[in-house]
Amino acid sequence: MRVYVKFDFNKICKVVLREQLDAIGVEYELQGVGEISFKSAPTQVEMQKIADTLDPYGIEVVNDQQIALVQRIKDAITEWVYDGENPKRYNFSTYLSEKLDYSYTHLSSLFSETTYSSIENFIILKKIDYAKSLMINSEHTLTEIAYKLNYSSVAHLSAQFKKTTGLTPSSFQKIIRKRKERAIML
Image (cartoon, rainbow, N blue to C red):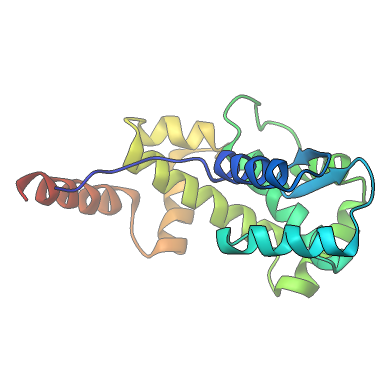
């Protein structure tokens, strides 16, 4: 028997961070996805313990400021794409600049230099991942998904979906439907 589950990476990460940091006994505050503020600077021994404790969960303490900022950019993009509560009808570059307190030009240059890809491309990849997740785990129509992800039309979503995955959204949905049918038969 196969069971499908749906999960929120950000929520899981926050729960793991809280559990592990509480067990270590340091005073902290989670500042958002991927950022922890400590009430007082942890000692070198505490930092090593934090790193060792989080490592088995695939959570890495990042010391390089540029790499940390790129991770914050990725986290902000993920948060923006997956946040269904806030409308995405405003300029993303403004959102990112205000959230991270750097000019968009600086953020864009740093991101491209570090990842060899653009912020815009990363946004598209995240949006397509989320679209796939919605197609698999919800009953949303393509029109609803396109609106939720701030696409100008279903055709625009479909074109980016095909360019990114090599499949049309309807082909992707057929594959998922067949997999679920096979799973039910097992």
